[in-house]
Image (cartoon, rainbow, N blue to C red):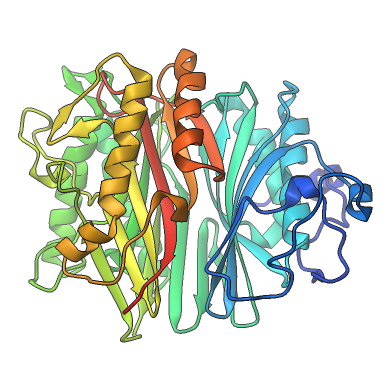
Length: 458
């Protein structure tokens, strides 16, 4: 839907990310230096340190939003992962405008024009979605990224926070095929971003909501010239995830609908298969949100390149989710712990939502800090070179320091500071958003997801 032209008056018409910036001439505010730059090989300006005081850069405009971003150099294009958290002013319109302005300023500092392809907007209140949509629509116009609005309150008390992904480079072609359907093509790769898939108004049960959103996901993939066999990553935001419906948790009903959908896709030869013809489940996050609805999105990849390999990863210290006992869910959660995409000499590893689980049991009950430690241990073991080798790929793998960004979901707001201390100590300087959300088991207090980029040595 496009909003009336009068809405555009709230946005400065000069705010365009299409203008190229120069890494030699553009002033850089130290507050907008990347938290990390990944896979770079001597590109312009990439070893430059920007002093925090006593520099001509001090005159550059510093916006109010707290931001962190990573720049990832991928062959002939660059990706930017942005985490933007405004000041907690209490006025969602001001905070949204501030966040958009910050994203624009960061992207205009890049050597090539950048396009935002996908974003997740974390909201404190469901009713704020309407004003945010109008602001985004006025700013992006026909180039709106695939967007999910998730009612998960930022832990710092803000009205919203934004995770966004942007792409730039002479080789890149970005197409906005339909609302929340974006195609990105470069170097023989085609990525498809889907977001904001919700069930029809009036559908309230988790099972029926899940049926609708999975069917719509398949429809949008088909519209984009793809199918579910191309999907490498899904996000499932589920309202009241641990609440009961007719005596059954809503998450268990989502798992029932997901299993049935995958079975139907498999019957139509539309599920991704591994080398032994076994079903290869995508990486995924299934997380709660403070609304009765469901919102889903996914990331798909198409390529005919022979140097691209997809690898599903399981943690040797955890039972595969799809092998869980029926006591956890009649239909087990169908996802892989991570999906690694080996492309030439680098690997991108999409880490699923990960919690404090050893084998199949939750551990460190009631202790958020220790659950955070265990969760990070699980991620570390999952993405390690030894685990890649265990899955048959030598010379690949990654470390915590290779994560480009993470999301940390915290169930209880009073655990925020303890969880953040652990994350900052273990992850170091990394773009992070902390959001309050229920995890898929009532006793779990923390869940973390992320994506890593690293070089291979084969």
